[in-house]
Length: 215
Image (tube, one colour):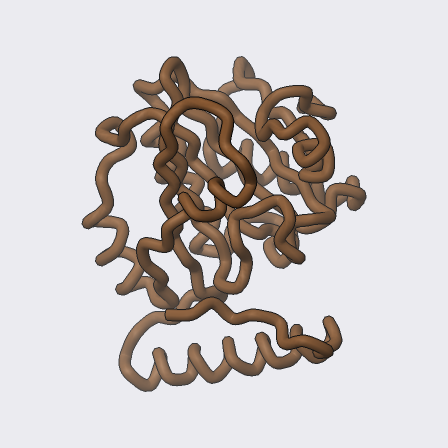
């Protein structure tokens, strides 16, 4: 299914109204069919890259859409058929984003935002990823409209979870999101969360190095 794209010349407010109307119509159809609609429709993407330097064009080419879902029932069907985190090769990325938002720094929904980053030992990352997915899909994170999606990055010595938001300059939203992540993951105090704006990632061409904020 094609992602919803903003039409040329369409204002941001009008685009938002159209998206809200489409979401309401989708939810009404799902309810009529006897399903339990989610607040947002989500798209799951997959990236498998070989180690080494890659251009932005190559990175975009490597991002593959796996599936989308908009109901509780469809989510569980999709999730139960996914490979477990422990079986994924390194380096691999899974991106779970709201429909219409590509998992790219430059996307219109992401370009002014950033992400909270948490590093996990590989033996526990699968559990934390599942808890994060359930919180995201269930709309349980504070400032939920500001949340764009979440990423699992499987690496050789560790796995990294990140949650992307729209506005890196809204300190209240950024810190509230941090607290919500800690709460829903029941994150032990020994774990450090780091925040990095996407424009900083664009400048140093790095997702996880040179973070700006620790909390």
